[in-house]
Length: 75
Image (cartoon, rainbow, N blue to C red; front, top):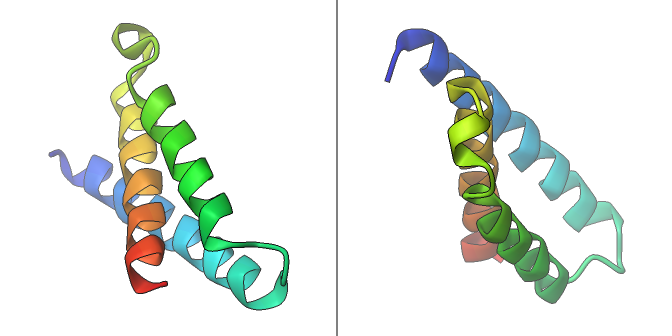
């Protein structure tokens, strides 16, 4: 992976992870089941129109999924 893509991945992962952790801690209505639903939506959308997406967009999608998976595992 190119250096700039690694930077984008790392930045996206940190932002998504932080936002989800904040939501988990402050939103009593945010459940593990809801997070699983969000992750399943990400999986479904991951391959949609993959040929028409830039490397940056695909990298951001991968980082988002990784952050969701991490929080789910930590839950």
